[in-house]
Amino acid sequence: MKKSVQSSLMAAALLLSATSLSVNAQSVSQDTARNLRTQSFTGTVTYDGSGAGTSGSDAAYFGTGSGAVSTGVANAFFGAYTGQNNSTAGRLTFIGFKAGNANTTGEYNTFVGSSAGFSNTTGRMNIFLGGSTGYYNVSGRLNTFVGYATGFNNTTGESNTFFGSNAGFNNTTGQRNTYLGQTAGNNSLTGNGNIFVGYKAGYKELGSDKLYIANSDTINPLIHGDFAAKQLVFNGKVGVSTSTFPTTVGGADVSSYKLFVKGGILTEEVRIRTSWADYVFKPEYQLKDLASVEKYIKENGHLPNVPSEKTVQNEGLSLGEIAKIQQEKIEELTLYLIDLKKISEKQQAEIDQLKRDLNK
Image 1 (cartoon, rainbow, N blue to C red):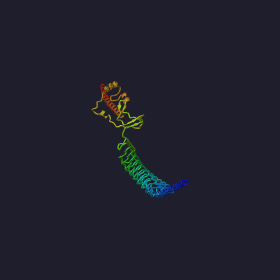
Image 2 (image 1 turned 90 degrees about the horizontal axis):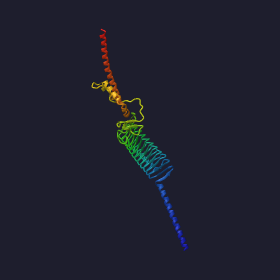
Image 3 (image 1 turned 90 degrees about the vertical axis):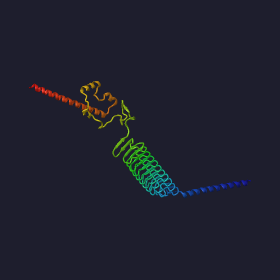
Image 4 (image 1 turned 60 degrees about the vertical axis):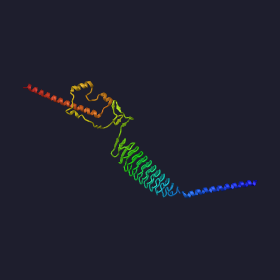
């Protein structure tokens, strides 16, 4: 009985030992097979994936065909066919299916997203973040595109900054543009030096050196500028040093006014276009006699057709209108002086005649 138990224990121990050896052998076999098939370390290169590259230095290639022929330095390719055609370019970060697929010698690029920077070959120092972002870029450099299909058709355009889905979508060779907002600058192909801010801002603009701040594809944005002509246009009301725009001043309706400045304006010149008071010199003008003017002044305390002090205090005045009124009074005074001159000349003629009569 005792020998039988001992024999059973020995058999069990031998079975466990054999099983352990089998498991260990199988595990080693699987790791070895995996290393032989897809994963290995070559100097400072780490790679994993069928057809992934093995050359270069300080590099990592993860995904089928990633970095297949790359010999560059300090590259990190993550995703199937990322950097597949890269040759000598270094310091690249490509993440996403086919990101940077055609890149050959373009250095210092960061492409993140499926097919981001897909066609780039020699373009360098670009940052493309988003699916299909910078898809057709070939040699453009110093671009920053963020958002799905942003800068999609850019080929050689440089120094552009596009943020938002489809922003700068059709730009091909345009340079130094800044588009912020979904589909901003969508139709600008070759424009340079533009700044478009807002949803669809500058959507239809084809020129260069333009400023759009808008939230639609309008050609008359809230703020429009031309850097070349040094012009800035506001298509709306403008308030300075105020959070609200008044609609009335005293009893006057100013809702149609476009500019309100709180605190005053200092300027060297003000030019106003308005109607003028030359109607005073027309034959049909009814010039009041001085007796009527005197009576009006006594009753009202100011000249006819001139606003009162109270009105000006409460409602303000229009510079163009008050200038015309003052000119009206000047021209009326001129007519009064002409009449007085005629009376004076007539009286002088009568005096001279009396003198001649007395001297006879």
